[in-house]
Length: 183
Image 1 (cartoon, rainbow, N blue to C red):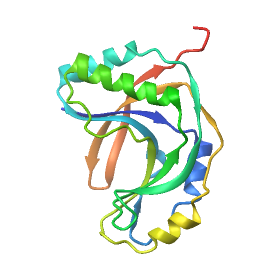
Image 2: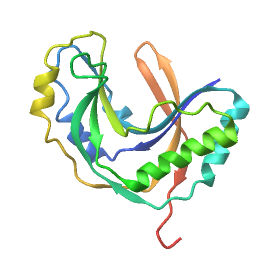
Image 3: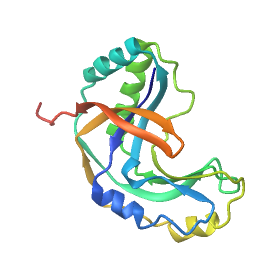
Image 4: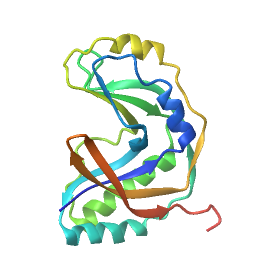
């Protein structure tokens, strides 16, 4: 079995910017900076045949390269009972279209159950075990104007994820280059 997700990687300079705002919430479990990514679609557990099919059919996606900018911080489901702390992403039409095409390929060509939640692009930076962690409201206020440099996105990736006692270990399984505008 393979536990899979589709994602966009972040450049080291962007990870460094995010690292600069991590900390100062005692109840947070901060994501390992090497694991930071933008999830286009979490797939979950699939068998070997479905894994190979997904790996192959994702290559059919043809979208142009684009740029992203990260800005703001927030949490899911609410700031009163946060479970996940995230960095936001400025609206981007190409990103939304890419996520939609990934969803279509997975559902229509690979039989994956449709995603129930609307695509909400974000970078998860911390998780909470406690229902009312201290310091979250102050953290959100202090970092509300956080933003990064604009960075190019020239590929997306299929990852496998292995859960271990120390957290998830991600492995890149396939690379899908985005196209030059003139391609």
